[in-house]
Each structure stands twice: as structure tokens, then as C-alpha cells.
Length: 250
Image (tube, rainbow, N blue to C red; front, side):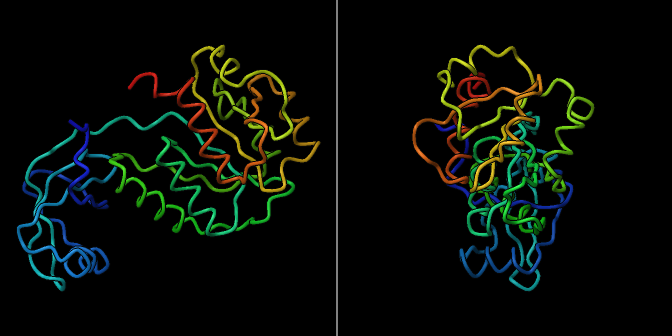
């Protein structure tokens, strides 16, 4: 039997969840359940808010005044993932995809970094959050990742040992041709991790030198092929989770 109920519709609610609570739906949520999915009053929905676990709720009212009435908790809240995802922002469509896949792959915090070759420096954080919520709704995830304000890569690295003491950066270097990444990751001592993916144009020589000089940085290769940044995100997160992340604990 599946660990999650994937057959039921899941919905994120930005409200406290408790037995017997009635949570009004906003216009878009009501339209989606009533008009798009054609749910009738009494239909069951699974809801979560990132804090209070997952709950079974039933639809009440119509599209104009729809609400959900909470009945029972179906899953207790899980701890947020300790995996950070550091990425150079991409153009919109690829960025949407990358954020969704990073959430699906277990990133607990999304941290945009501005590199020398980053093409996009202004982000719509509401859109990032909407994509993260959509991925969580579809994949049975209970916690919405934190989204951090973009920061220049050089500034991030300069303060890393103060702000992120003990957290190791897995630097996915497009020019790395060294050891098998599975062996490299498997040899790491247990610690919080951050995965760093660069922009479509790659890291500059100066950035690569700066990264490789830091003791908390481990460099890995992603194989002989040239990957788009959004594809590299999925490949790197899958590799890290399988070898050194929470897949080993599942």
C-alpha cells in the first residue's frame, strides 16, 4: 500500500488546522474545486498548511461561499528537510520547472544566488512560492520550503562559516572531471548539506577558485554530458539524496 493517499485531491491552506475548524476558501480555490474538479458538497479533500500535518476535510457551500470543514488528521506534521538548494535564477519557464522539481526532490530551503553569469537578477518570490506549493500539493509533501532573498554568490560564501556553520556545500562543477561523485559523497561525514547549481553559462573561473578554496565545499561532477541548469538540478539532487541524503533513511 502506498504511504500516501495519491487518489485524493490535496490543497494547501494558509490557516490553522484543527478538528472541527471551518476554513473559507479564496475565490481561486473555490473555483478550482467546484468548477474545475466539479466537486459537490460533502466531497473529501486532503489539506495541509506546512505546520499542522495533513487533514481530511469536506467541502461545504458553493463557489461563492465555499469552505472546508476539517474532520480528522490523516498524517502528523513531519520535520522540514535539512537540504538547502542554492541556484542561479533562470528565465521564467525553466525557473518554474526547477523550483517544482527541487521541492519534489526534497529541498527544504530554496536560496537563489546571483553569479557573474546569472541572466536573471530579479525574482517574483510570490511566483516561486506558488510553484513550491503546487509541487507540495501534488507530491504528498507536508512542509513548504523557505524561500530566501537572492544574494550575490561572493557575499554568501564570505559569510558562510558564520551563517551556515557546519553545513557543507556540494558544488556541482561543470568542469570537474575527477573522482566518481558517488564515492565522493559516500565518503562525507554526516552533516547538513546544500547543493549548488550554477547558471546556464556556468561559473566563472574566479567563482570556481573561490568555491574550491573553502573547506566546507565538496566538488562533484555530474557526468560527461552537458546539462541544462534545470536538468542539472534534478540530477544533482537525486544523486545527493540517494547517497548522502534522506533517501537512505526512508
